[in-house]
Image (cartoon, rainbow, N blue to C red; front, side, top):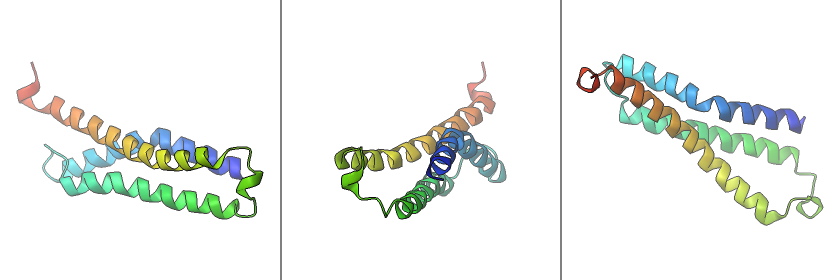
Length: 113
């Protein structure tokens, strides 16, 4: 069961930049088509990160019966992985926003040569 959850998390993280890019382009289109509104950018970075907090909570509740001393992975490494997974979520979202920005700039006549 844990492997399925971890595989789902991995697949979501791989698809997250494209998902964020599509939502950013949709928001730009609804707002006039030339840029992604600032509040949308903040939301698109925050929501996947908050979702990851929730997913980690579910994983920890499933693993609550296991003691950290019994884990083959040292606690220090677990703590670093926990911190960096949130940074990866924010990074994947910002990658999607960057891709949306590049696509919007390419449509701008000023940048077409």
